[in-house]
Length: 247
Image (cartoon, rainbow, N blue to C red; front, top):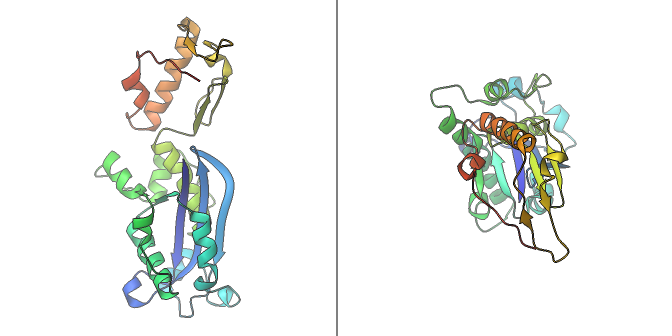
């Protein structure tokens, strides 16, 4: 599964008043793993930046004098997004600006939310933490994400932080390979936890029951996932089921 975490900075708050995007940042994840690929551009908006917006992101019109217009990067942006699912905090804001920019430069067709599955992490956070503050700084504090570099808002930095927040909210950055390798950003257990998986020459997987040590490692992993996901660990629901993998 390919995910793109996306954020923008703008000249002001209201797209209906002609405000424009001045920075866009995207971070790629594949199968819940950060790939290191990103898309980042500063953009010349051809209009003034509101003083209030400048206080938030610190970007001045003078800094953008030689930056490209959105129309010059629109095709490159759409190629980077591809058919990925989009992860955005307060998605209505960013999508409103992006759709307006695409329409302004003559890109016809469906809106981004019609072409992509969009996951709004603000909506997700409000579901999981009702009645609490759910801005990005509050979520970083809640999920122990380092945001010490975030003195000002920035599209690429905020996308990087949001990627960490999203992974923490939804169970962590975990991959499992049937060849017997495990990687986890949130748990301190190794490949020995998978030693009970054996595959005979015929290619069919069989399941050998875990011993006490392996079961303990399994419980530790589930506890970490359950804590990070706010009690929504899917494996808790599946615990005890017998699964046979076939080639």
